[in-house]
Length: 186
Image 1: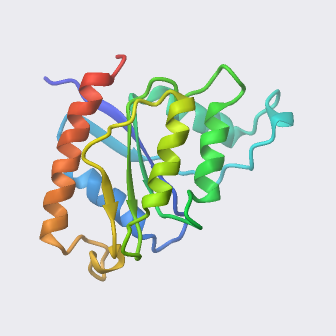
Image 2: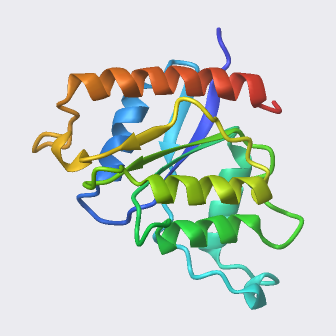
């Protein structure tokens, strides 16, 4: 029996009808069998404040434990003001502290950004990749995934309705599985 790799999926949008959550759900459906993907919620995380490191909230602790226990991370995010959403930045901060105890360290990662705009969240995608350098998340470089006009890619039930995008995302997930296999510690 092949070993399965636990992948934490972080969705940057908190909105109920989030395009990025639809993308994340599609990626989970398209993932090769060796990857076990699950969304890790970030909306419940209290804003990071170093004063709380000695007595972290139950939500911080559960989030840190979940990320520490996974083998890889996949980020799916919109772009807000040419950068990443505040909730996503907060999740990165919560997981990276206290200093020296980052739960992100060494976990292979990748980014998919999706937006109704034509450039598909390019700015957010690259800002997130910049944080990977400090967090020591080995980032998959290719294929890059920017889904422009993503509001037109899904049907009323949130299912991907564009076959070309489906093929692209399937190839992305196959490449990500290979990336994770080549860069996992365990």
